Image (tube, rainbow, N blue to C red; front, side, top):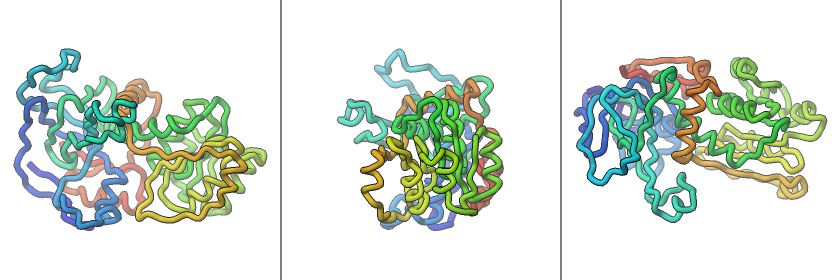
Length: 346
């Protein structure tokens, strides 16, 4: 089969490799869609390949969907409640395989499982293999491309669990890329009045299309001052930072109102130090939170939101590439061209 193989910084090649074989309790899947994620991009551009990257070459990609073409042997003692899968099922794969037994899992913090392993192999390929426990059947009416948003949307659901948004709250989303636009839709569905800040005019236009009540051109003035103008001087009840850079993070803290919530959603690569006046947090009683990855329940909930059209993801897809052009997909995303780039191996 054909598969993309990452050898180093901006060295992504499509090569012939052996077809994968499903082991006991696994499925072989013909991959139909895989989205380019910021974490894929960090490896591609080298910002997260420090320390020698001993696992190269590898096939990247974890936002993938497809059709089951073969099943491995059954496993003795499988829980009868485990959903059955058949050849021909359309499925989406959850890459985070958690043990359910460690200290973190037993206290419900599955996204920090101490025995976490990648149960799903790279999605920028014609075929992939995944444990049945990591698969969800894609409901009728949800496309392969749509279901590939389950993973980023699950991360967003986890973040909103650490960010209180009450009906009528003023909510600022800093960054209007695909992630920020998903945050926008979820915040609006939770009853928030949503303000989106970004320096790219086309992204602000998309934010309005997807329901933003106000937008701020971050390249044309002080976004903090504009937030204050739009909130009668109070600031925002919740701010979600969907970009990993020091200046937007600093601005987000200044945007927060008394008793406000500020969530750092995006990782910052390379790591940066940020000078912060602690009095800003102290005297406004800001609740500053971080969020990382997702739980199995978040993943299932994400699929439900897509199934019932509660969030729209089709407008976020601006570029589609064949597997042979996967490097173009990465370069387009690296250059902030459009919004979501989708690779379609099938």
